[in-house]
Image 1 (cartoon, rainbow, N blue to C red):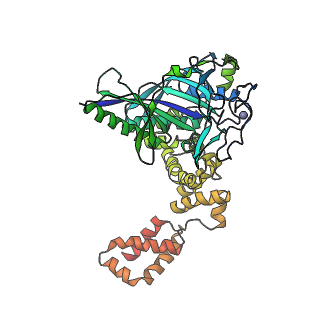
Image 2: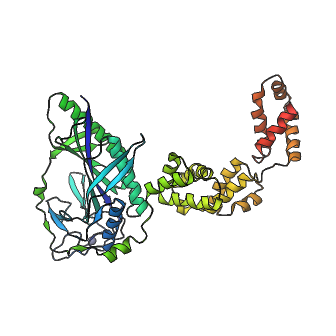
Image 3: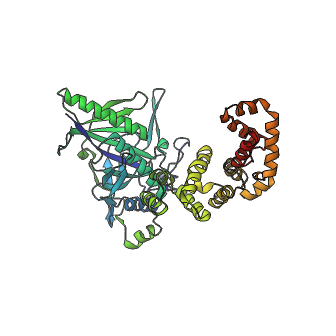
Length: 476
Ligand SMILES: [Zn+2]
């Protein structure tokens, strides 16, 4: 029997607002001492009132629009009641039956060549809870995270493999960073994910009981945990067993799933309207203001790069991983005003390497798109050779000086002058009689070695093609 997996994901995205969702405490406490960004509101002291941070609603509208979801004119806040030490109010303020956006989808171009469309059921805003830590027999609570704004997004059961689930997270992370609504750093838990997994015989149209996997906090962990669970369910069913609706926790170090508790039903949370907050009214004017500068989205830009510039899918994909990088590419191409693929090669190889090595974003580079275009032109014209051009990218970044100035100051211009090159080649040939003899007796692959000697003599500035021509003549 062949099986297929049915996977739905619930993701929590931490928004990059300055302050928390209902108070003025700083939202981002990463690396700060416990209980330093707290106040009476986010620790649930009696008599306080929450006030909605408008930026949270605005960022939710951006994401909803990018997801093609329907932004609701009126949405409500609700209390989700449960007792846990890291939840000082005894309830979490969230949205339940009237969330800020409904519906929508995200398309996932898969490496295998097909596109998987994942439907979004709903998108809502809510506050985060605190953090519990066990140490020396004590349970320690850090309330810094209480009230940190989150968007929760729930997909339909549309994903069919662990790879598709991983791809969803890759595209979601790309999108939230692109929109500038979250840093989308999974190591800092900016995106957290629960996965609902079930299996059925391939081609069947019913749903079997599902399990929920919690605590998966990296894309690789999501891929591994889901793949492991799919295999477990298949083994269970083939052995004649039944799938129970367990909640499982992924132990990343051990690579195993552990059973947590039988899944609560939603009724357990006794949801009711939050009496301390007004309905959230998203009128047309506010919405228009939020969407005034809505950007071209990554998949649209990827498709345009392929159509407009004739770039291969591979290039278009890499260039649109980050918005700043794709802006950089287009600005460099415009300044260069030539072959789009040539500029793509320079960005993907030289600029991206620099960004990775230095942990920078493309908009922070001192090698501006204009400087990169100048460097490629210098190589095109033969003023410098390719390897000097590559070195120039780093030199411009280090000094901030224009490429031409560096070429002049450091004497990097390529030696193409035939007379000068010939003199150097003659010197090398005269100094290496043994190699000359070997070359002449048939070991012509030695030409590369001779070229290398000349390049060394000229500190890499010689025009290698010219050198090879002269050497062949001399050795001939
Ligand atoms: Zn606070």
